[in-house]
Length: 223
Image 1 (cartoon, rainbow, N blue to C red):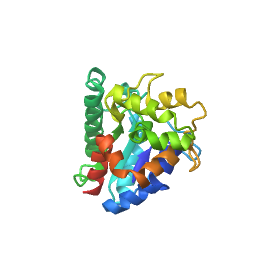
Image 2: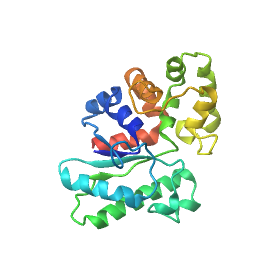
Image 3: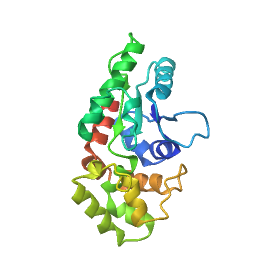
Image 4: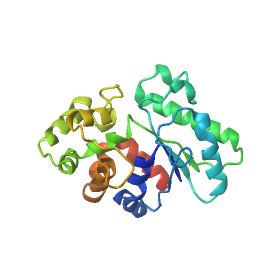
């Protein structure tokens, strides 16, 4: 059970070949969008998320419960691990936030079996995963010339998960700058699920190699 920000993440994790790959790893992914039906995504306060995490842990005693939230634009003051995370480099800050989340959940459920809650925060944004295969991005957008531009971004930043969280340089903003019609969306016809599904189907190992934090998360869910 994975608490996610919006319909895009739900579609990409549950209705594409990502789900098939997870099944091959030994588990099935069941995303649940934060908030009421029709919620358009985005997570503000951890206190808004916590009741849903606790409810899933109680309702699904045989399942692991996890999260998938973007570090980009996350209001650190509203999350466990602050103020330590606010002064730390991003790669360290996400670990501090995840550790803080786990501590709050454990305190709320003292009898929680260790390892059932697996907090995960994506560096820096869900779209970072798409950059694992610039060719898949360019093909989906119908513009092969964009492949090199996407590859250059990865090389310049030092990796997919190192593409920063600036208001104009976050992964989604970089995609939109090169391909303005980009549609994140929540349907299978939106670009993000299409691209991630294509990568999962054709270049799964490339995704895992290019996004080691994401790969580590899946390993935690599988073990």
